[in-house]
Structures are given as structure tokens and as C-alpha cells.
Image (cartoon, rainbow, N blue to C red):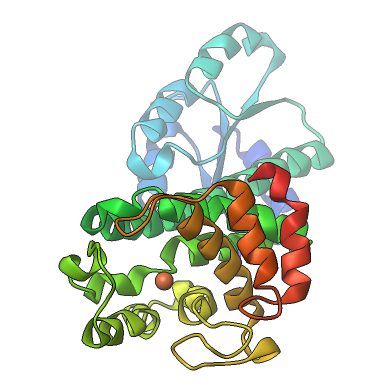
Length: 317
Ligand SMILES: [Fe+2]
């Protein structure tokens, strides 16, 4: 889809010059001859960027910028002033109104195109960051719900997430994979929402019937993500984090490399925190004891290649 640029100037030659230059770069251009007309067009068309003159009849550039910034959809739209040198005295006012850039007349084509491209790219980068943050915060909300029901594991999700991220970096995972790992780690126990609180907080060992319910939490977690497409990449972390290298895990009893890597990685981070922190049924073990247990269970419960890598981050745990 073409990016939409609103050009505002009372000088028709300048307006058309800007339009010609911008159209050559495949932008959609909308023209307005003063601030008042521009504001109506802004509300109707939601442009991606505005280039505006300052001195104009009816409504000048400052009043127009102020009106744009007061609108919800206008407070982040890149706004560039096009001004004559004689108006530089006004630039401090422009800055106060959060103008993004200003070009002096007469401008050359490349100068205009560069200023527009830089601002549009920066806006896109910010939007992408905002979307990712919003996404992560929604995921954190779910994590908070899980922990609210299970006070004994408070902080567990956060710690597992930090350990898993360090581990992922040690394994050389790229940014995109680390990002999936992050929300996978946050959501790994979401299926525990179906496990009754009296089981979650039980001090003694589970009865066979209670185990049956606990065994189901990975699959229940996956069911909960049904229809939420952007969370689907988290599924391997949720579904396989209780599988064990020798096939003794659940829910499927997969063995060795049959277990997706996501599950084998998270299993180590989850085990490390579960053993080293206080739980209703045990006191947390020291770091040394926990690492010793992991080492002893290399080839048994855990992927030996991953265990040796896990020891590389031992100092940071
Ligand atoms: Fe779990």
C-alpha cells in the first residue's frame, strides 16, 4: 500500500512541485492550500506524514500542527515544516509543538525525499516496537493470572524466562527466536489454570488422580491458545517442557531428539528454577546442588549437548 503524504502550502507552484517529487517515489500525495482545509483532509484521510508551510491564510502551520497533535491519531504522525528563512525565529515554537523536522525554502528534491523517508522509517520502527511491547504485556497479564492462583510459584515465571533467555543467547539464537522464547517461557504453564488450587499448593505428594490432572497441563495450555495465531509459536514450549530425554516425561513420553528443541531448552530452565527455589513441598536447593542434579541427569532427563551449554551460563545464574 502506498504511503500517504499530505502537503500543505498556499503557494500552488510549491505544492505542485512537492507533489511531483513525492509521486516520483511512489507516494500518494494529497494537497491542501491552508491549515483549515488541511485539517479537514487530515481527519478524513489519516495521512502517514504531513509536510506543511508555516505562513498561510485562514489557519497557519502552527495552529494546524497544534490541532493535529491534539488528535488521538495525530499525536504520532511525522510532521515536517516547510518554511522560509525569514521565519526561523518561529522554530522554537515549532519545536515546542513537537514538529519532527523542518526544511527551508527553496528545498531540493533529494532533501525533501530524505527527510520524508527518514521520518516514515522511524515511525514504522516505533510502531513495530509498540506492537511488540503491547503483545508482551498481554502475555504478562496471563502470567500474572497464573501466579495469582499459585502464590508458591510467584516469581517462577519471571525467573524461568530470564534463565531461558540467557540460555538462548548462549546457544546463539537470533533475535526473532529469542523473542518467541521469551513469550513461550512466560506462557509455558498457562495450562495450570485448569489445575485446582488445592492441587497446585498441596504440600504432600500427589495421588494418582491428582497426577492425572497435572499431566494434562501442557495440552490444556495449547488448547487455550486455540485461535490466537500470533501466540502459536509458543506452543512447542508449552507442550513439550515436561518431556524428558529418556522418554520418562509427559504428555507424550517422547525420547531424545524427538522432543522439539524448544521443549528441551525450557525443561532445563524450568527444572533449574523449580529445584533451586522454595516450593510448598520442598525447600530450595543451593545452586551447586541444583547444577549437580542437572549434571547427573544429563542423558537421563536432559539433552547432554544442552546440559554442557547450560553450564556455560552457570556463573550468571
Ligand atoms: Fe509445567
